Length: 159
Image (tube, rainbow, N blue to C red; front, side, top):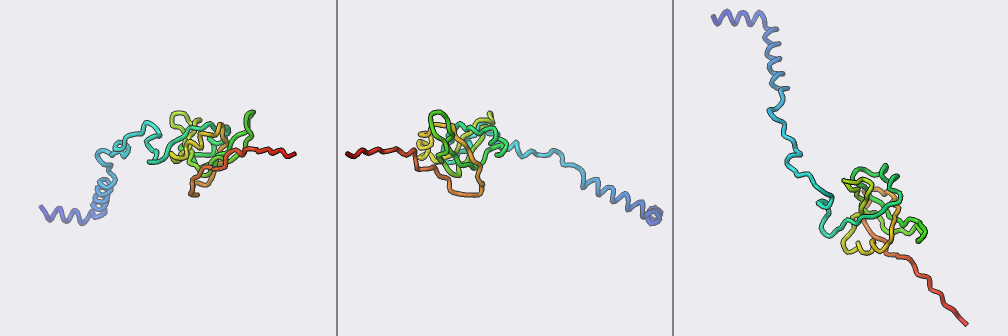
C-alpha cells in the first residue's frame, strides 16, 4: 500500500509540488485573527492643552492674514514671526515675536494661538492685535519675543 502511494507521488511530482506550494502560500498570506488597532491604546486628546510643555502657555491671538496662513501651515500650525498689523489706532510693522510656534485650534481651524514661555506671556498680551504672521523655517531654534516696545517720542524745548 505504501509502495503504491510512493510510486504515485513519484509519477505526479509536479502535482505534489504545486499542492505543497499552494498550502504554504495559503498559510503565509492568511490574515491574523484580529488586527490590533494602535489607536485604541492611546486616549484621544480632547483639547490642545494636553500638549503644552511645562513652563509654557498658549496665548490665543487674532491674525489678520489667517485665511492665507491657513493654506500655508499644516493642520497643527507652524513656526512664525509675529508683526503688528496696521489699523486705524496703530501703525503696523512692529515685530512682536520671532520663531514662535503657532497652533491651530482643533475645533475651529480659523483660530490660532502661539506657544510662549509663561514669563513672557504678559509682554505678548501688552500688544493690541491683530497680528500678521510670517511663516518661518521650523528647523530654526530660538523662540523669542521682541523686547523693543513702541518707542516714546520725547520733545524738549529750549529758549
